[in-house]
Length: 119
Image (cartoon, rainbow, N blue to C red):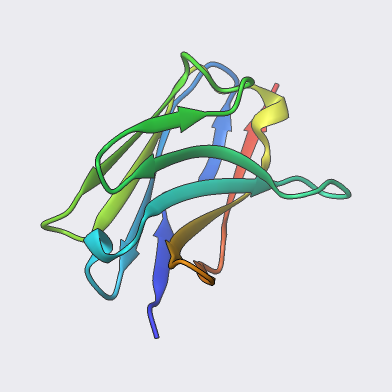
C-alpha cells in the first residue's frame, strides 16, 4: 500500500506563491503518472497538473503559465509550484498516483492540503 503525504498548503494573499509537496512511501517511478487535483467546496475534483513517468507534463487551462509541476525520483516526491495565486485557486489540493495495466488501473490519493488565497 502506497501512502502519499501532502504538505505546503496554507493561507496566502492574491498574487503570492506556495509550493506543495507530495511525498510517496514508495518509488514514484513505478507509477505511470503523478498528479495534483483540487476540490473547492461544492465543486467536483478537477485535475490541476500531471506528470508522466517520462517527465511529460499537462496542466489545467486555469493554471497554465502560473503553476509548475516537477518530480524528484530520488526523493520520491512531486512538487507543485504555484505562482500568481488567485482567490479562485482556493481549494483542497490532493496528490494522486496512477498506475495502469492492460486491463486494470489503480489510484492512490493523499489526505489533501488546504490552500486559501485571500483577495
